[in-house]
Length: 550
Image: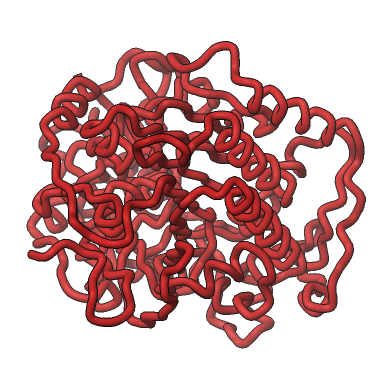
């Protein structure tokens, strides 16, 4: 039903062309670097020599905002090429609880799955799909007015490819979510894979068959190499991505996964001859290693330095390929969210207030206390995180729902680590925010993430610099994360480049929802303002404008 409604909406999209110069680019290259915060961009900008250096010399918005509160991968990617906040896209988090589902053993829903086909998102036994995305992407709109436009999405994560590609991709490829060591597509897409994908998978197999030697440390990265103890058995900060043969987990948490993704994107551009037809084509590229490196090692060690320098080099090679092919292409690069470094290094580096979340601040912990007080048979709350959305158990008797909600809220607010707790009713009653995103109140940020029927009954906001990974959990693979409504997680760079485009920099804030109308204007595509949340950004320095007149 959702897919049919979206297709009908796409068919009704208006057509409009702008009489602007220069002519529309033949290829749009939209790149999302997962967890590439504005802080990382500022820290390393002067050291880039490849693709990121080129983009740094274009039209630069160093303070782009993922304006919403739920700064996770899926919601962030859903804003980039839709022009809409999660409150409109419906992608409120990487996953949510839907207690109306009775066909599976749990109530967890993955943000990019078809729940009618999968058995359990928690165990990775799900069917990737765009059916949860409630709005069209730029690619969907392009194909609605001109089916000759080709839309391709390639990413390290299925949710990145799906949320940027949309409902009508010609080809969509992502590293499978079980071991991230083979490119797959949606179940109703191409079989067998084209030659470019077969080559990419063979290259991954060959890379995994041999060990990865430690990457050499440049003087820049050597300056970031310092051991940070997370606990008695785990440390980060001095890694160089050495791995034994066959280790798929370390393959993913290294520049190798991004190299495979960018190379496949370049091969698909060549093999499909994107940018060589009569219509404008689009390729969306989601590179995910920066996120995995940030989670596993934090953002300020030698690992992140090596990762960003490698990504810079790979993007440089991609742009060089496009240059040799003489394609008229336009690039936008941004991120789905920012990130926060490991607590232990923050404490050493002038942030003594940084801390890990208390283990008791979970749905099970708080929900069990409420259940005991109210005489319930099981925990009152559902949810998998230490912050963000929490859902009341639907089995709670009607006369105890309001007390359970109130008591849950009070217990969260009693913690010195909690900044605020909002109920769904309070968020629904809040008008959508306007004005610069850094001025939005916390509840306005939560409102931008809220979608009725998917969002929680409570939204819990931890205080700044409280990492929602407890000391106990930090002993596992992840030591650092994102997801908060604070600016270190919301601020991302937005970089535009096209040959001949006069560079300029606008340091004031803009939003990632502004990307779709900005790109639409470049190709002469009219997007009704009432259908999106973003605005067109003028990419032409001086009195002329790349945006349509009002």
